Length: 340
Image (cartoon, rainbow, N blue to C red):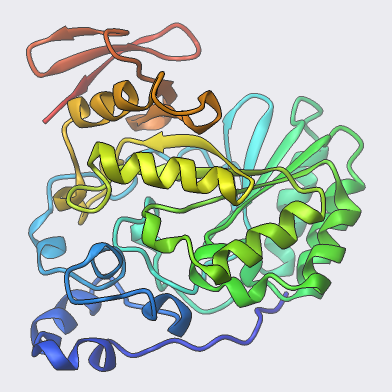
C-alpha cells in the first residue's frame, strides 16, 4: 500500500518567530512533530487553540505517570494492526501517518514510528482474522489516518473487506477534513460511495477548524451519501468552555456533521496538561441540553483504562466516592475511575 503525496512544515519554521525552537525540539525528539501547511494556516497567534493542538509543549515531557497504552490496545490485538475490544467490531490500523501529529493523540506511543502503511502480510493476517470471526459486523479503519492512503490502496482495503460476507458496516475515522481538506476530492468520494454502507467519523475540536475548506470537504462527503459524525476531545484551555462547545456543535450541523462523542481526555502519557475535570464536561452537556437542537448534543464518554470500553456520562448519572467515580461498563462490570 502507498500513501498520498503530502508536505509538512518543520518545527523550526513554525516556531522561529517565538524563539521556542530550542526548547520544543527536545519534545519533538521524543514525541514527533508533523504539521500540514493547510492546518498551519489556521493558527492566528502562538498559544491559540490551533497552536496548542499541534505544536509541542515542554509539559509533554513532564508527564510520566500516565499510561503509554491506557486502553490496553496491545493486549487486545490478536494479530498486528487489528484491535478487537468489542464482540461485534474491530479496529483496523491501516496507516501510521497523519497530516498533523496531534499532541493529545490516544496512540501517542506510536506517533512517528516508521513511515510505511500496514504491509501486505499484516493486512492479510488481519483480513483472515476478520473472515474467521462471523460475529464481527463492523470494521473501523483507523491509524494514523486511513485517508492518507492513496486511492488505489484505500480501494484495495475496502474491496477486500466488502468481500467478507458478515462485514455489514465499514467506518473510517479521519481528521483529514480538518487537517488536509484538499485530500477530499470528487475522485475520492466517487471511490468511497461504491462501498456503502460506509460511515465517516471526523474530528473537529474547535470552531476555528470550521473553514471554507473543511466545509467543502464535508459537503463533498455528504453529497456522496456518506453519513458524517464527529468525535471531539475535551481539551483544557482549548474547548472546555460552554460557549466554545456550543459554537462548535451547532457549527458542525451546518456542515451536515452530526456531533457523536465528546471524549474525556484519555490517560495517555505526555498529555496530562490537556485533561479537564469531569465536572467541566458535565457542565457542557448541561449547557447544551435544551438550549440547542438535540441533534447538536453528543454523548460525553470516558474510554475506561484496561480496555473496559466507553461509558457515557450524564449529569447526576453516576456514583462518586470522593475523587473516585463508580462506572458501569457495557458488560455490567463496576469500574472505579479517578477524577482530577
